[in-house]
Image (cartoon, rainbow, N blue to C red; front, top):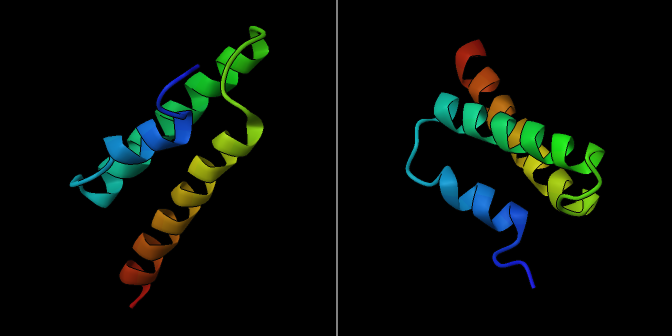
Length: 68
């Protein structure tokens, strides 16, 4: 059994980091997961999508903050 799940590891890795650093880390996690999937292994797509949704949420918060 893989432990912890991909999304749990990715989300824990960004705790306490600045938003732009969080985006960089999440992007790296997703890119690696996509390479792993193409190689025939890697986390489930739903798990990758959890991280993608967090990326989008953080990016939206940054954009809203700068647009104000």
